[in-house]
Length: 175
Ligand SMILES: Nc1ncnc2c1ncn2[C@@H]1O[C@H](COP(=O)(O)OP(=O)(O)OP(=O)(O)O)[C@@H](O)[C@H]1O
Ligand SMILES: [Mg+2]
Image (cartoon, rainbow, N blue to C red; front, side):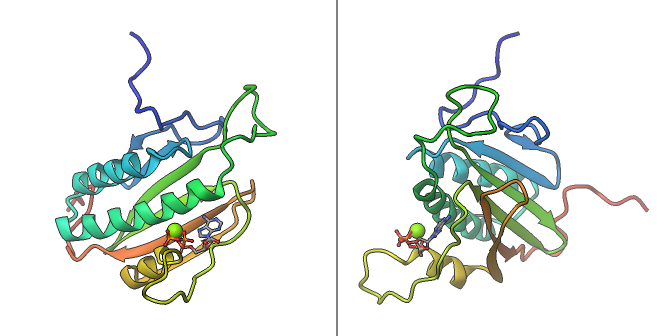
């Protein structure tokens, strides 16, 4: 058997302790991506497939995909594709970003990791501004959003949305 086919923007996760790339395991959907212009499209596609598998409704999927697009686009800008990861055992390993979706009771958490420790900054640009609208959109669509700093470095920006479907659950409960 050969290597599984991956989209060009998907990269193996550099840290050996991390979950397998591109995995749908029921409650968590994870995708590692190279910070390339194609990453938002792959991230949207992955989010759509994961949420659809969790029987999330189309409106919520669309909302999630909009948020994924904005957060991944920001992460691409923040990541420096030219940098070699200092802790990488593979020479030439490029920067990467990571999308994680978590299904919790009645909500989905969208997380996007990048290696830049600088936090996202909500802009108060006017309606006709060309930039600074992504996070305004995320704030409008999400129940809550924010960021945290993983101990291994970088940061994760997250947004939480409601699932609308109260019964959406990946694993049927036993009675
Ligand atoms: N992942 C991130 N890492 C570092 N800084 C970020 C990140 N996301 C956002 N920021 C900062 O927050 C600012 C606002 O982000 P926002 O997405 O609202 O606007 P933008 O990306 O500048 O423009 P737009 O999204 O409208 O194209 C960015 O300009 C950047 O300085
Ligand atoms: Mg943006």
